[in-house]
Image: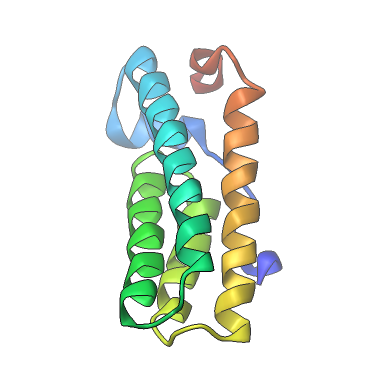
Amino acid sequence: MLAALPYSVFNARDFVAVFGIPKDIAAALVVQMDLSLGRGMESMVEAEGAPWDEAGTQSVMGIAHTAKGNALQVCASRLAAASETLEILAAGGKSERASAALAVWRKTAEEFRHFVRCNPTLEDLFE
């Protein structure tokens, strides 16, 4: 599942080129995405521990859907793809594949957050 994801964690050049956003605003959006993703990861821990009944399944799907939308907005295609896979597989309830997708989602979310934290001058990424 992990091998099927796009290679790049974040494509900063596409982000600025596609949306035509000034670098400082683009950097601020990436920081906001990081904060939102942190909250989503915390919520996912709660959702994962709850029974995957109808409400639990909807919770996992909702968190994945939000992460996918946010990732697409900042051109984080690897996280967007992992989120979409989780959203689709979680629709069927808890299963081995959904659990594997959740592990992949968590790993790609951590990759994105690590990438942001290791690049304190995000504006430089948009050169």
